Image 1: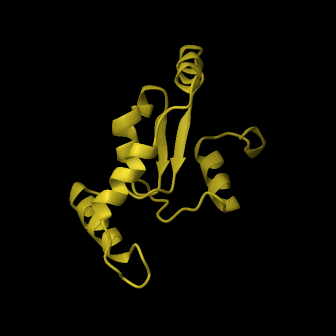
Image 2: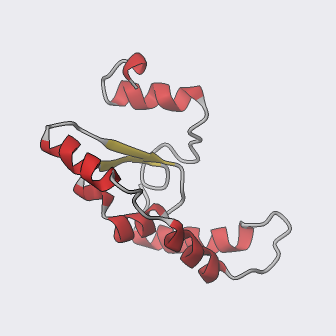
Image 3: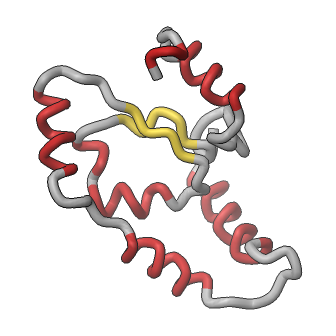
Length: 117
């Protein structure tokens, strides 16, 4: 599990290692651009609200580094779902959502059949 101090270290390391050649760039500008790019599509927030009101349990899976918190701060997705599997917050470090084993792990931890995902 990451601690607040680890998050700071991770952010600093990510800024240094973002490009493989180590070139300098506007890390704050990149984060701002990413944050600015996130918004609900028309009608989605209402769909999420209705799903929650009707008892559907929803979960978010992300392999973002600690930046998922920027999305949460802006959109408040936790109003509708749980950030269940975030690679920087769980023991699934460096998960990649395109890998089959990740979905098998998610489904086994949530006790659901993979065919229902």
